[in-house]
Image (tube, rainbow, N blue to C red; front, top):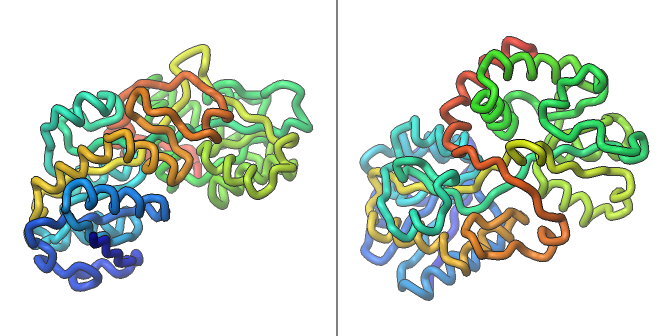
Length: 339
């Protein structure tokens, strides 16, 4: 059994760092460029090798750097698979022309249609919910129960959220465009800016901690950041209220971790086998558990933390629209002054 790992920084995009172009094309290998960095994923690669005899070679790095590297390597790339997070980033890989469609009965039957590319260029394997948090010391009841409420003037000076350069927010606005149209989505984004408690700064954890500190009345973040905060600082549970938005309507905005097959990869059959493996019950649990995300395959139960977190209605719009609407979303952010 062989699983090799090479780290890749954003600057190290030239061929020759880690896997050299054409160096690992031997039969029996699959070469993965991954933006995921969870130790639990190691069990995935080991199990795949155990089941198939196919050795896994892996490079880790940031999504945009990996996409650029594969594009630069061109027809000589050693990469067979790209794994990344957020449908918006998968769209960037698609736009870069590095992904190839896969036709697989296994993937089409196990991965719900709204969590995969319509033409099979990528597949989602776990989901993350972007939810609302509020200051439970200040509010007896949630001041916002839908994303649309974040633009209500009653919340002026209360909203903490990340910058517009953050792909999670780009995808959230892209979903608003899909549901409401660009004009209404822009009105919403302008209203959120007018309600900022402070200029956007920090990551998702900082938004949640801003609520706990009383700096923000409400905040938006992915669910797993809250679980991390609770693990490290459980005493904050009484200070932070949790809202699964839009339960009376379309449901919670969710995004994916996903993977696609590289068009010029040297091991195309092994690449498809790996993509299909990620949809197995074994892989679903471990892939999702690496970041306390939810499995996409129906019938695969989430872990105990997520079960305790509660159930919620999910927006079933195809996540591919997050990428398709991303350019419009960024233009809206720029026009409304969402830094």
